[in-house]
Image 1 (cartoon, protein in one colour):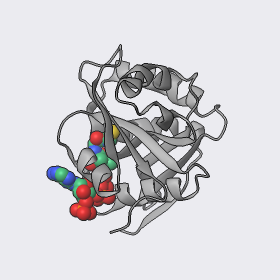
Image 2 (cartoon, protein in one colour; image 1 turned 30 degrees about the vertical axis):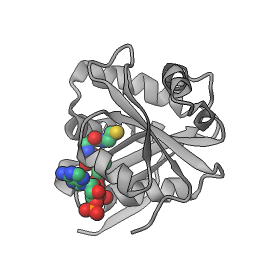
Image 3 (tube, protein in one colour; image 1 turned 45 degrees about the horizontal axis):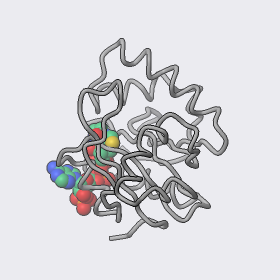
Image 4 (cartoon, helix red, strand yellow; image 1 turned 180 degrees about the vertical axis):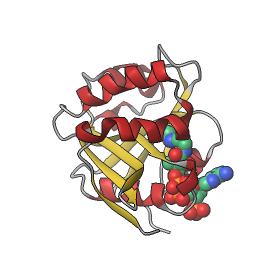
Length: 176
Ligand SMILES: CC(C)(COP(=O)(O)OP(=O)(O)OC[C@H]1O[C@@H](n2cnc3c(N)ncnc32)[C@H](O)[C@@H]1OP(=O)(O)O)[C@@H](O)C(=O)NCCC(=O)NCCS
C-alpha cells in the first residue's frame, strides 16, 4: 500500500492522530483525553504545523511542531537543564518537534525519518530541538542518525514518570 506524506489538518484529525500515538507510544484513555486538549491548544500557537503519513487514506503516522517560544511550558521546564549545561541558547531560533509517532505496523519503513526531515525542511530556524524518553530506543537512534545530539539528560517533566533527554540538531537535518 502506498504511503503518502503531506500536510495534516491536525485539529480536524486529532482523534485519528491520538489513536496512532496511543498504540505507538502507549497512552491510556485518560492520557488521550488530556493530550487532546494539549494538541488543540498547541495548534493555535504561531507557526505550529503538522504533517501526516497516510496509507490507503488512513493516518498511520504524524509529526507536529512549532518555533520554540521561551514562555511555552515545555521550554520553561527544559530551560534550567539546558542552562546548567551551557546550551540555553538552543531555545532561541529553534524549531521544536513536539510529537512524532508512527503506527507499529508501519514502523521501520522510513516514515518517521521522512516526516521529521520534511517538517524541518520547511522551518526557517537554523536548528531544531526535541525531547525523548532518556533510554536507548528507536526514536533516540533515529534522532541521532539525523544529527540530533544530547543537550541535557535526565530531564524531569512534572507529570511524566520517566526522565527525558533534550536533543538538538542543526537544520537541515543530516541525510544518509
Ligand atoms: C520513533 C518512530 C517515530 C520512528 O518511526 P519509523 O517510521 O519506525 O522510523 P524510520 O523507519 O523512519 O527510521 C527508523 C530509524 O530508527 C532507528 N531505529 C529503528 N529501530 C531501532 C532500534 N531498535 N534501535 C536503534 N535505532 C533504531 C534507526 O536509526 C532507523 O534508521 P535506519 O533507517 O537507518 O534503519 C517510531 O519508532 C515510533 O513511533 N515509536 C514509538 C513512539 C515514539 O517513541 N515516538 C517518539 C517520541 S520522542
